Image 1 (tube, rainbow, N blue to C red):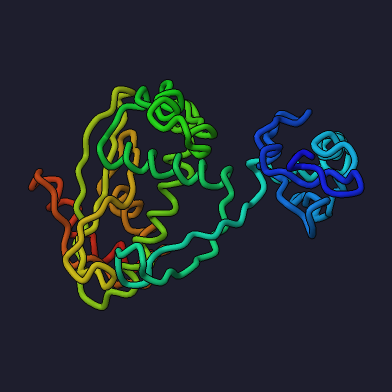
Image 2 (cartoon, helix red, strand yellow):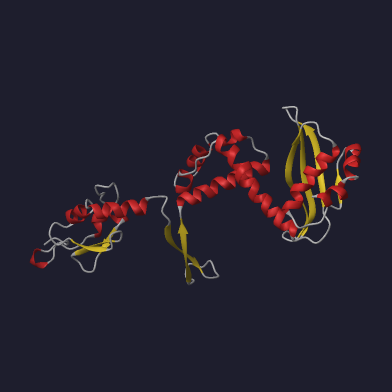
Length: 278
């Protein structure tokens, strides 16, 4: 009598069946295990027992063809759906005999891939990478991490990066900086540097230097860029402080700094008066 055959002609469940591939291209082990007794398998996607006492493995394969099972498979394998995972780690020691603690994690591969793109764009901005560094970067990560679903869903082009960095990341970090500055009760300094762009326009970059409550040290960070044609000092100073006054509850800067003393001097005399107007 076969080991997989029970008395009275019943076929019992065999773990060797789990290596077979069903009609959906999935291994039986991905969704099936032994059920409530020796003549049943259990589908964890459909949450039901499958009787296999007659034709055995074929009954499991027939279950995989049912519409309910195929729908359940789509929900589980869809990377846009959040997944729950248990991860076990030793409690306080690296010993293999140590007790473990379980942590329930929710993973949405679509969101995780978006987070990876955001991290990469932040790295681009921090290290002044060219937008061309985005070309084929998804293919690169997929080659480096062939078993990663996050890498498999990573897709970023220079066009999307050129939009997402100034329109997505920049406002976020600017808001974070403004909130931090608003908590500072000490004077701060505004630095500005003016240059001509390739379009023959005046670009003024502004940075702020202040004592950061978040970082607990003096912090220098980029604030914004202003663009001018030909503008008088009063117009420049007004634009410099108007946005800052709207964004923060801080008082006027302690001073302004610029490498060009003539420009700095012409703006400085109007600082207090312009700030009151703002």
